[in-house]
Image (cartoon, rainbow, N blue to C red):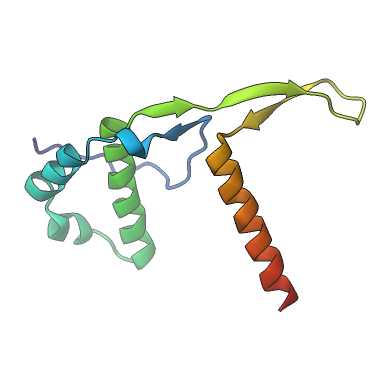
Length: 113
């Protein structure tokens, strides 16, 4: 189950889908991390904390790609009042929109304090 993980990718990524963590295979992720990952060897090549964080998140992103299914984000054409062509807006599920609204409200309340 041990795999060599390529570590030359950058940390940032953009996507038009999201991970469906509710239906993830957590037993397989746990088994992979317990059996196939030598953290001391992986982090021994990191010079800075930023490098270590990038490696760690890169490994987790690979595991997410393998063991967590992707759900595409629906896009709908919307009318833009600028006179330009229609553009596609991202349509997230209700619970994600509610979390975004709650985050926005919290950030606004933090600004006024």
